[in-house]
Length: 268
Ligand code: BTN
Image: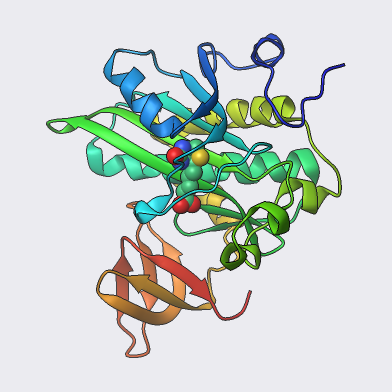
């Protein structure tokens, strides 16, 4: 049997894939700048909904807020092309849909203590293991396509491959499971979850998706600090609303709706 710990075997992935339309087309590269960039190009050329773009290594992987995303061999770095019938502002739903898909997959498949962190992180045992980057292209008042990029730290040791400043806050599946896991199997489970949750999110049941996402959101109810473009905000993280905003209750009693930022909590 071939080693599936470092590379996805696309033929085997598709053989056992129990989706209706996600992952029916897969583009794979040993090394690419960013799967999101590649997916956007393909989407612009008309690639069909559900196309998956996958790389073994990203040389210019991107995170939120223009950050770099380290993407060494052994991780799962992929993007999915979606064409939702949503208004541009509603496409934020897909961030939560993708986060929930990852959280459920990691919890159900590996029995891990998973949590979601606003807006787009998935943590295991308090450390970041996955990030989601969604990018939208719209025509007038309609989303033309959305690329959902998902990066999961899988079969490597962050203390060996990540820069020092990230090592304290990140982890990998290998570390948390105490063994290497099959990238084929993980991707299959993720794509099945994503298809199902995406359909609920876009076909009118986003409230249930958000409710499920919140079940993993351990930061809710905690004292939090949020870094925004306008500086730091402090308060209690009360809730996340259907527009994706974090509701932060400040000391004055005022509840602020925060749309962009990085949250850190004082107690976990
Ligand atoms: C974040 O947490 O800041 C989001 C990270 C998203 C990383 C993934 S890896 C696959 C896709 N391609 C990219 O360049 N970024 C996303």
